[in-house]
Length: 232
Ligand code: DC
Image (cartoon, rainbow, N blue to C red; front, side, top):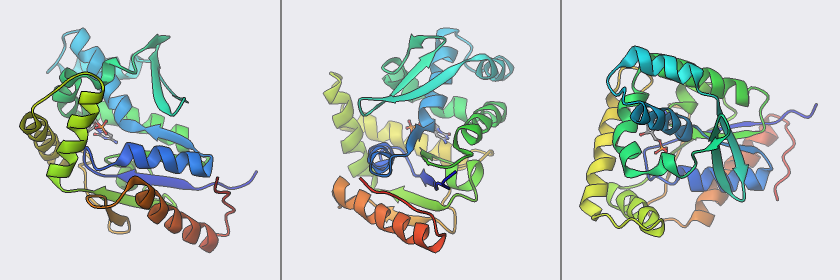
């Protein structure tokens, strides 16, 4: 079988990970995996079951949930036992609680295993917080995306507005800062830049430029490793 690359992308909320990873996967004809969607799905069910703060129950729940990620019409489609939760995992309430759920070690262990299973044969663009450091520390391509906080807040507020929720920019910014703090300071696999990851600052570049910068790295690494990539 033709060997395919593992492309791992990490970065804080609003740094452009999903948009970039999606386009990259399309160009490479690889599978796109949004690992944040998995943590969001667990959080949604934690809220529904009203078990916030009860870590043992939350860990058990993450083991039981049958989370299926598919990529349909350019979007991540998430189902749990057949129920489509793709919209429900993007609400403000989930945003507010997801960092607290994703800092639980037992939850991470279960989800990381699932992610490793999905990506083990390569041909995948996976994005999150610990993909370059924990999930695939030997990934072929490692990217760390950054952007200044005001730009990230602007992007997130726009995403909410497009879905019909107008939120004050300051509130969005505070939520991002709070999540950044928890995600970067938690004990288990915090968001950190892997020393061998290539940093791409997206504050002042267009999405097309971002994708093209990363594709150049992918091409270079594929050549070094003698792996054939076909770019659409
Ligand atoms: O990328 P996102 O905003 O959808 O991620 C939601 C939350 O999930 C984020 O605040 C931290 C957590 N997360 C994580 O801990 N590890 C990952 N690999 C991906 C997301």
